[in-house]
Length: 327
Image (cartoon, rainbow, N blue to C red; front, side, top):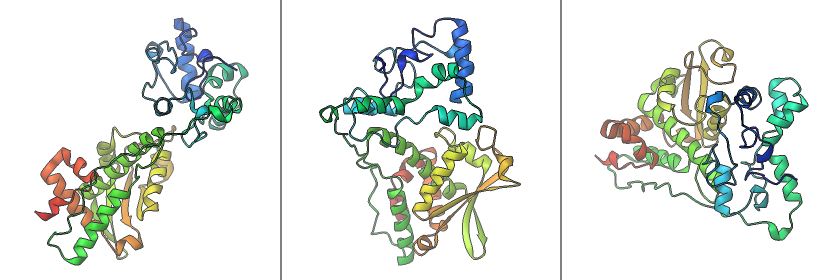
């Protein structure tokens, strides 16, 4: 068993980025090229720097705020293998099998040992876990995040139907990715997912074009508006990432779909990212939600916030602060 293993199971001492292994310009060039090929990460040689490993407080040069590292620090454990929740959905999944599946070819053994094995965290953690006793396992410390949701203003002078529509919209915003009783790592992941979902919902409300089709209403935005507004949020352009997040909306009764102008292949890059042009996105409420709310309520609320608060409107939308409807 290796002596220097990171929080997530990566083997620091054989990592090409470790201080003892990244010594010459040739090392940097080879590492840069191989990281691009096997990790789908493309750092230029001059940007690579020696790392002391994530067990080091001062010498850890890559992803110092790594969710898994911060989670292990929160739980005061040497690595994820010591956690009662291991393996969890945030455990390291990188492996030779996944790389070969992506590339469609076998990886030479020499390259495997140098550029894949160091980061096969799950396998390394499993080996550590099997060597531990029950007394070594530490109970995971769950955390919750207060979303600071503003209470729905029941005293608004609206019709019963209007109040029901806005109250349902309030409940949707409140229940999108609740951050309760989760591991530190999962909270950090879900924070970003929630930010994406709420930002997208707000975007449809502020800029979406209202379209009626077969007696059903939906809001529509084009790809250029999407890219301009969602830039800066993680995985906003990844086809897989976007797809997974839209499924979360579907689970709470919101349907969002991509519509390419020609074919799906035309709007996807070789790296499986969405292109900036050539598609639209449509949002509608499912049948059950339509009985309680509608896209016009979303538009009215989002646009009122935007008119009053401009670039700061997201903080009010994210907290479902509907007191503006009292004006």
